[in-house]
Length: 81
Image (cartoon, rainbow, N blue to C red; front, side, top):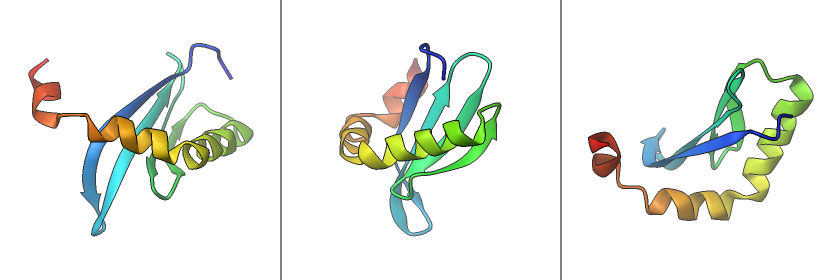
């Protein structure tokens, strides 16, 4: 994987009756989107299958940190930027 991989985290949003957090991984050419708590990549543009598995594992192993990031995101403030 590229060393310039960026991760973007959404605020906490309702999905299927549960609190979820969307996570996007990008490196300029490729993009993958998944969500916590399921830790599944749901959309992939350019990542190899083994890389997708690594991204899913990363989400699973770092769920607590991802949740902490999402808790402080103010969606209204983010839209105003």
